[in-house]
Structure formats: structure tokens, C-alpha cells
Amino acid sequence: MSLWPTQAGADAFYGSPRSVNSSTVNMNWYRANITFVQPPFFMRMVGPVKRFPIHVKCAEATLAWLDQVWRNAGRDQRVIDNWGMSVFSGSYCYRTMRGLQHLSMHAYGCAMDFDAPRNSLHDTTPHFATLRQQVVEPFLKLGGVWGGDWNGNGESADERRADGMHFQFARLN
Ligand SMILES: [Zn+2]
Image 1 (cartoon, rainbow, N blue to C red):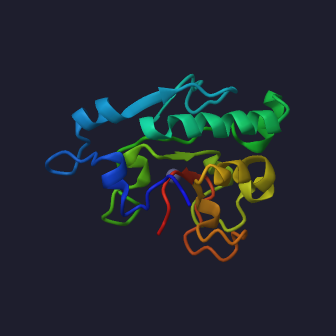
Image 2 (image 1 turned 180 degrees about the vertical axis):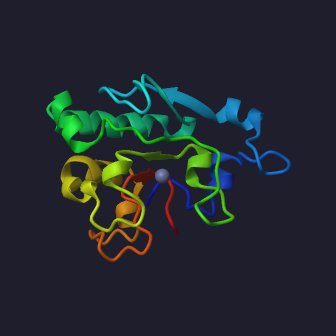
Image 3 (image 1 turned 60 degrees about the horizontal axis):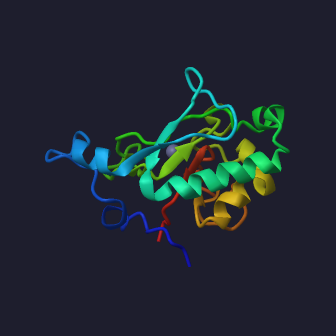
């Protein structure tokens, strides 16, 4: 049971972010659906990330996740830094899936990336695999899916398209 849609059902649940020609975002959709949340700990991308964009339907769960990670870290920024949770690698972004026709879940604003340097695409030994209890499990408890373990069997080694930086509020099927 999950309150989140499947990826195929993302249009129905999150609304279609496409403009008429699909190459750009529909700004009316953006204004109606994208909000900004303030993380409970320090994060940086190019500079400090005071707030980041997310779909309004995911805002509460996103903050619940980050609050739990913050508590798990003992509210110690140095622990967050060691875990890589202060290395923000993006959330809402209008783009297609790499090498595919479909819209990325990032285009719906229901996905976030953290610590891309240590959790790169196709890496089947992502750093977050060592932080299951602290970082991954709290996200799964909210019904989310972690790209480092798409099939949810508790392992990353068997993932053909491991994406350890990636956390989304949408099921594969
Ligand atoms: Zn991602």
C-alpha cells in the first residue's frame, strides 16, 4: 500500500508538466504544483541550498524524511556531511529520463538526488547502501523508492540501472 502513484500514473497524480510541444515545462503547471521546502540541516549545491523545489503533494513527506534523517544524525551537521546528505544534487528539473523518451520523475517534482559523487548512476555499491537504516529506510517507510534498490530486495548489486543518488515518490509498478 502506498499513497504514491506508479511512474505510469504520474500524469494523473501529479499533473502533466508538459507544454504543448513537450520540450519545455508548462509554466501554469509549475506555478500550481511546485513549492519550496526548507531543509532542517545545511545543504549545498553550487552555494547554500536554503530551499529547494518539490511537488506540493510531496512537500510534507520530503520534510518528514529529512527531519528523520536529521534526528538519526543526532542533529549533528558533521554526521550529515559524512553521510553526504548535505551534498544536494537536485530535485525538480524538467528533463527526460537519460536516454529515454519518458519524462524523468524529476520533471514532476517528485524526485530528489543526494551526493551524486559517491552515488553515481550505474554504481552498484553506492555510498547510501551503507546508510540503509539512517537514510534509506526512513524514505521507504514513507512509501518512497530508492534508485539504489529499485526492486526493493535490499541489495544494490543486482540493479541494472542503479541510481543511488535518487529518491522518488513514485512506484515502478
Ligand atoms: Zn534522480
